[in-house]
Length: 213
Ligand SMILES: [Zn+2]
Ligand SMILES: [Zn+2]
Ligand SMILES: [Zn+2]
Image 1 (spheres, helix red, strand yellow):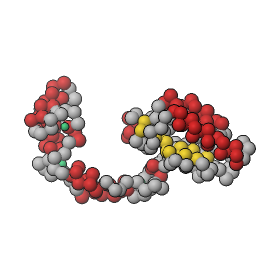
Image 2 (cartoon, helix red, strand yellow):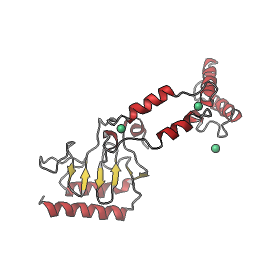
Image 3 (cartoon, helix red, strand yellow):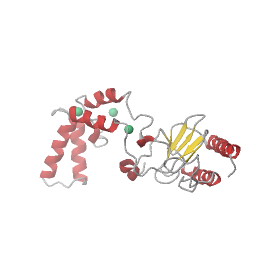
Image 4 (cartoon, helix red, strand yellow):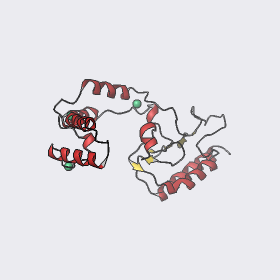
């Protein structure tokens, strides 16, 4: 995942999309009368509130630059972490303390020496993988409780943060990209290129059947 998308973006999904599909996908957008970013500029019944296109078969929306959680899950999440903190004895707090000591001793952050020391410390203190993943390790149970709490939660279907950039209604196939079509893109179903082409064909037919371009 691109760093910009990871921190600021909202392109997420279970399966990464091959960037090689980009040309065909963009051609599909042009064929449907949209531009290369997914905007549909005719103010008719098919234009979505975000400037994309939607009919009975599919939806295309351009990247949502201002997407925020509108369903309350992000706030709930934040509150949960306010109320549930790691214990002092948790690995995650002990390693923070150790790293602060290193900094105070003047050992340069992320230097070779620093990484070696943290790697050893982590292994001796209960994280077999050492440096790798040590920043996310917790042994006080908070992470477990969080997973339990979060298991059946998540953003609501209508939350602005998780709206698809492409949605094929007959199968529920959804695809999201970062800023531009198929950049750092993800999909909810692991389909092949051949299957995508079939979907695209059906979408185009749905337009030609309903109206003339
Ligand atoms: Zn949300
Ligand atoms: Zn392990
Ligand atoms: Zn913990």
